[in-house]
Amino acid sequence: MQTYEILVQNRAVRGNSADMTLVRTSVGIDQVHIMFDDAEWLDFPIKITFAQGDDVVTQPLTVSEIENSDEWVAEATVTVPYEVVDMVGRIRVTLQGTDADGRHIITAKGSPLSVEEAGDVIDGTPPEDAPTVDEWTQAYANAQSLLNDVQSIKSNLQGQLDDMVDAIREQVSADSQAIVDQILETCAAPATKESLGLVQVGAGLSITEAGLLSASATNGITTSQIMQLRNLASLAYYCFDTEFDDTGALREGATVKPTALPLASMVDGTTITITDDGKLALALPVADGTGY
Image (cartoon, rainbow, N blue to C red; front, side):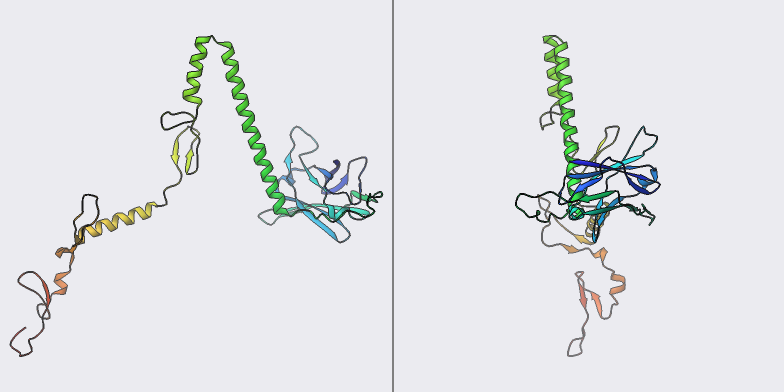
């Protein structure tokens, strides 16, 4: 893969390689390395646009900061899309970005790359179109690549720890090696139900810098919902006479407590009365007019 260097200076683009010419119909084997001269570019999500004729392709650009350089502050590398290498001519390159506040940064018009005609192909016809992948696919691929890097770091770290343990074993006596192995089996082995070893922080848990492990998620019941359940239990206790079996299940026959009824406002003594046995009754006149 050939890399062409492009410099962004004073928001202008210019080529910085001895050869800035691509070959027509090349697919996925040419890339550009961009150097930025000002830290202002680090404040924006940057995109790069390649254009030739009516073909315009925009791609996201992952920019990384450069340390220990007096001239350049950031850099990025991206593959030249196929669509702008399918005909002879100049390739326009634009870098731009817009932040969350609507601020916009963009380079001046420039054509640092060019395309020259390809040589004869074996079958006499140019290759079929191979459009550039969309931004989502690129972002997914970049994220997966990052995960691969993280996994590599994790694997390398485990390898370094294993090397350190082996070095310690080589430096101690046979009796001390047994002690080292016992410590590793106790502390460096994964935790089980029978023994406490290395514990990984899983979903629903969090751990502070001081090593305090706590739950960051619940079983789905919020504090407000717990309070509502408590209030319902209290309401049932004050309003109903209830009985429960040995398993805690409610028995049939729950009745309303007399103290829970607003009898003073309900019993007027005329149309609604309380019988001698304490029952609430509706007072209706007898048909023959002799009483109620």
